[in-house]
Amino acid sequence: MDATRYDAVVLGGGAAGLSAATLLARSRRRVVVVDAGEPRNAPSAHLHNFLSRDGMAPAELLAAGRRELAGYGGEVVEGLAVAVKHAERGFAVRLASGADLSTRGVLVATGLRDELAEIPGLRDRWGDTVLHCPYCHGHEVRDQPIGVVGGDNRPFTLHQAALVRLWSDDVTFFPNRIALEAGERERLTAWGVRVIDGDVARLSARDGLTVELADGREVGRKAVFVGPRFVPNDRMLTELGCEVGDDGWVTTDASGRTSVAGVWAAGNVVDSPAQLVSAAGAGSTAAIALNHHLLAQDVERAGALTRA
Image (spheres, rainbow, N blue to C red):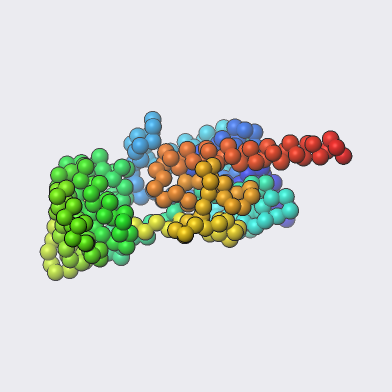
């Protein structure tokens, strides 16, 4: 079966991927987005810090993005890309359905996944009363009793415990498996954060949200922030041979260009702190660079035909 030919295939249909694809479609490129339909922010009821879209449901933003893309002739394929390989004229993208897409360039915007601490009750309330981003949700729980539960992501969680204090005077930090140094404890206490030691046994929904410790103590909170371990969905990039930095993440230049010619990456797959709005911006930046890459090929091909 012959592969469908595109100028660019975008893997991932979130803010970064749709932004990139729309820009490419407006540049009169034949572009398709391959989207598995599992956005990271699906558990959230609303999004914030996205100019003109404050409070919108994440699914509504993606639906609007798809409509805009379609209006410029861009395509969306709902499915999972299982392999991307080098081909004679660019790359071959294989989908789980068995379909093949042939493309001159690839833009990966597959995001990351949040690995949560194995605390009973935590995952059940993820995106509701269990949160991770104060900039996304801090305003909505302002001036309420807030907890911060420690986990494997030590630097992020310690920063979070101090940061959340900007939104509330009633913040309790449960280090859980984090052993605080004397200076760390002193700084948090001076900043007005109460520290309660001991292993966290579970989170329960009694009286809003209750943090239950292994020794039987219970502390009521309205919301709890946690520090997940951020794991990029970068298999497609690493299997293509994209260079990985000392931190284990695929490296890119300012435009999102990877070390493999013709391959760009944007959003959380290469930038864990990226908010929706910055992921969308990164997608646009990467798409411009990819379009210039395609343009260089077009001009070179035209020159070769003229000389022939």
